[in-house]
Image (cartoon, one colour):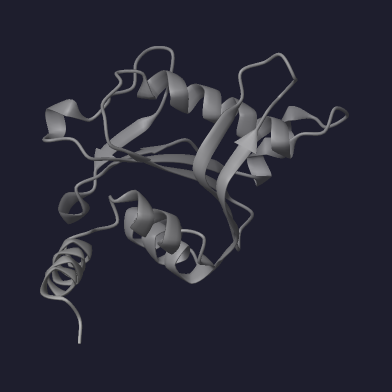
Length: 167
């Protein structure tokens, strides 16, 4: 028989676990590496893309251009059936730098696609999407693009997220 305080502790942990959502790091980190679940989240965020499947759902993917350049580590890096590339971030705090982070993320994603001998027009065949799911209180807190970044930012209704896309 279990001691009463151990039973209470387990009940409290179970209740806490049941309150968790995709916004919580343990859930996000468990769900997103699964290609089927990652594809479903991307389909809900970007239904116009008609994503069939996702491959290479790589959590904590690092992109480092050169040893001395600033690199990034994204929550999830994935490719779909049309060779589109996605970085997906769960952003819990508004650091007021998301348009600039999106710009940097896309630059580094493009560097992973292009070889030194490639023409830039190769990028037309490999669209990239930078998505931030933001835990922000209202639409006014969703980051907006500025003159230095031509991003589309939209509220994703019931999912309580901001999506920033680069195509």
